[in-house]
Image (cartoon, rainbow, N blue to C red; front, side):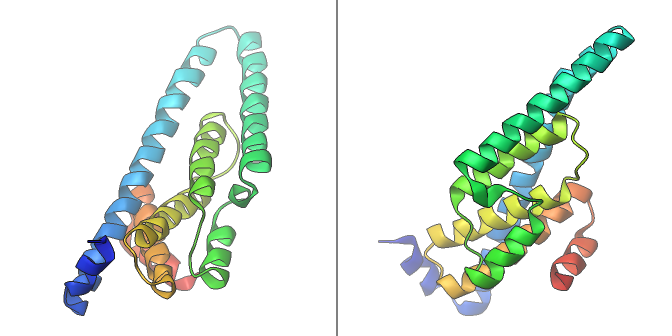
Length: 181
């Protein structure tokens, strides 16, 4: 029996609470995994470079920054152009134009590209990738659960809010941000 038929048996009010919790937990967990991976890669690169001579640090920094930017550019240009950009405008676009649908490939590429660029020293924030990854994963989870396409917007918004809350430890600000956007 498909999962959707089991979910439809649950009374609507309880179903909404359960699905919201599932989307929030998935958004929070993927955000924690993202941040742990960024920190791990950062710790694998930068302390070693900082321990070297100033010239080694400068040359190594330039190399790491260039290589990480090039790798992220290749990932987003060749493998998933939908993952290009900061993430927030792309999720907003998907929310309004595609009922919150984000291809799983784009989520994976943004996850890997975000880790590489943030740990590689690029001057970008974690907000955009976090919103895109968490909102996209919650939307894909809703699709996997057989949730009606029109209701997947709720999943994307809930996942994005949970991702921001997990990344910055600011649940109320995350909710306000999602409502504003």
